[in-house]
Amino acid sequence: MPLARHVDPDELIETLKDHPLHKAGAHKRGVSHTTPYSSRYAASVELSKYKIPQDGAPADTVHQLLKDELDLDGRPSLNLASFVGTYMEREAEALMIENISKNMSDADEYPAMMDMHARCISIIAHLWGVQKGEKAIGSATTGSSEAIHLGGLAMKRRWQEKRMAEGKDTSKPNIIMGANAQVALEKFARYFEVEARILPVSEDSSYRLDPELVKKNIDENTIGIFVILGSTYTGHYEPVEEIHDILDAYEKETGNDIPIHVDAASGGFIAPFTNAKAGKKWNFELPRVKSINTSGHKFGLVYAGVGWIIWRDESYLPKHLVFELHYLGGTEESYTLNFSRPGAQIIAQYYNLIHLGFNGFRSIMENTLANARLLSRALEHTGWFRCVSDIHRKKGDFKFEKGKKQYDEGENSAAYNAGLPVVAFTLADDFKKDYPHVKQDSISNLLRAKQYIIPNYPLPPNEEKTEILRVVVRESLSLDMIDRLVTDICQVMEQLMNTDVTDLAAWQPSNPSAEKTHASLGHRAHNRHKAKRPMHEGVHRSVC
Picture 1 (cartoon, helix red, strand yellow):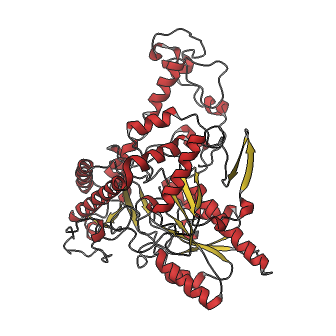
Picture 2 (cartoon, one colour):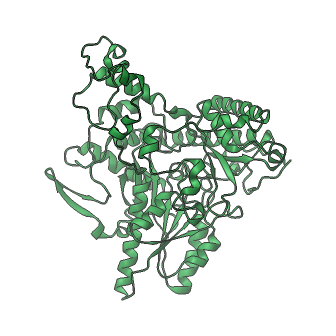
C-alpha cells in the first residue's frame, strides 16, 4: 500500500470558505428525509472526510453517496492493466458472502475451512510436480508479496544455519534477481537485510533475468535466486532450468549449494495447464527449486486477497521460523507475516479448483493466450505498433521483423512461445518518424476516456528509453471485447494522427483530488524526475 500523509481539515476548509455551500449556511442540521437525495447531505452538508463526525448519518444516505463517489473509479472489467481477477461466478461469490466473517487464524473454530485450505495446498503441490518421497508443506497468504517474503526468509535462514555450522561469516547475505522483478522482491531484501543484486535486463535477454549475468554474480554469500515465471512487464517466463543448470555447475566447482525460489505469481496457475507449459522445466521437477509462490487472486481466478507458497519438502522450512500457537482452545503451527486474515478467498479457491478441474482451467488459460495472440497480431498488422511480448510468434521465434508474415497456424499454445497472456506493445519506428508529435501516453489517456485502463510505462532500468503499452488478457476479455478494443485503439490512433501538437494538450491526465495532492507522498508522471530513487538505480513498481 502507498504511504499517505495526514491531512489537516481546518487548513483545507479555510481554502474553501468562498464556496457557495458555506455561504448558504451548511452548518444547519436536517434530520428527516425521504430519499438520500432529499437529505441535508445532498445539497447543504458535506460528508465528513478527514475527521470522524460528531453525529452519524443515515445508512441509506451514506451508502448512496459513497456509491456515487465510487462510480468515479474505473470499471474493473476494463482495467486491462491488472493481473488481478475481476470476475467470479455467482456461486463462488455466494460462498464468499456466506463465509465473509470467517477468520483464517481461528483454526479450531472453523475446521471445515481449514480442511479446504489443506486440500488447496495438496492440489497445488501436485500441479507443481511434487516429488515422491518428499512431503510438501505450504500456506495461504494475503498475496504473492507475503509469500515471496516467506520464501526469501526461509532461504536466508537455511543459509545462515549452514554457514554457522561451518563456522563461517553470516553478515553479508545477497540474493539475485532481474531488474524486471516486481517490487515485492526488492522489499524482501530491504526489509530482511539482504543485499539485492539486481541484474540488468536487455532486449537480448528478452527483458528478463540473464543466466550469463547470474553466473557472474553468485558467490558463497548468495542465499538464493529469485526466478520469475511471468515478468509483469512483458509476460516472458524466465529460464528456470537454464539457471538451475548453471547453479549445478557452480556447486560442482565450488561446493556452494544455491537454491531457487520461483516467483510464479501469475504463471503458477498458467504453466501447469497450458499446452505450451513453461517451455522447459520450472517446478519441483528441478531439485534446486525449493519453494514456489503464486497469487490465487490472479490466474487462480479468485478476487483479491489470496496467495500461496509451497516448499517442496518440510525440511526446507526451518523449524524455528514455525510458531506453535495455542489460541482459542486449539493448537496450530503457523508461518506467516500476519495473523487474522479472511477465509472466504480460500473457500473460493477450493471452489474454482473443484468446479473447473484440470480441463476447465486448461480451457480458460488456452482461451486467454489465444485472445492475447489475436490482439498481438491485430496490433502489428496495423503497421503502427510492434509487440515486445512474443507469445504470438512461432515457438523459437522471438524477434519482430518488419514485413514478416505473421504465424497463425498453431493448433494451440504449444506451437507458440510460452508466456503469460500479456500484450506489451510500442509504437513502430516508422510511425514515430511519420508522426513525431504522437506520444504513447496520449494513447493511454484517450483510451482511458473510453473507460479502458491500459498503462504506458518504461521498460526496466537499462531499457527504460523504450516505453510500452500493456494489456493483460484475463478470462473476462472475450473475443468480442478484443474486437471492440482493437476498433477503439484504431479510432484513437486515427484521431491522434489527425491532431496537431497543440491539441494533444487536451489529452493529458486530469488534476488530482485533494486527498492525492495533500496526503500522497508520491509524484505524478510529469514530476517523476523528482523521485528520491531514479529508475536507473534499481527495481521500480510495475503495474500488476
